[in-house]
Length: 117
Image (cartoon, rainbow, N blue to C red; front, side, top):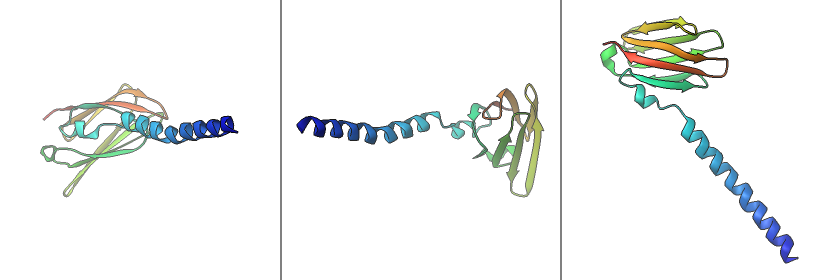
């Protein structure tokens, strides 16, 4: 009987630890959008993203969507909307921020942003 109790206790402690390690793993792979505030960063996206940028670009928020063929970027700010689309190997500049696709698939987009202002 003591061995069965010990086995249940060990199994319960292993099950309880699994969600915590999964949450830690997800937190370490989340994109750092704050690094893009100044218009220069490299980010890996697994889904649609929206984040703030410095108002010196004439926009205050960028929204990025993608599929296996193209990336779409939309910048918005007080009274302004600007945007563009491009495919793998291409680039687009939106209000002084240049976007280049490093890697693109249906599940992931790797982009490099570079401030031009």
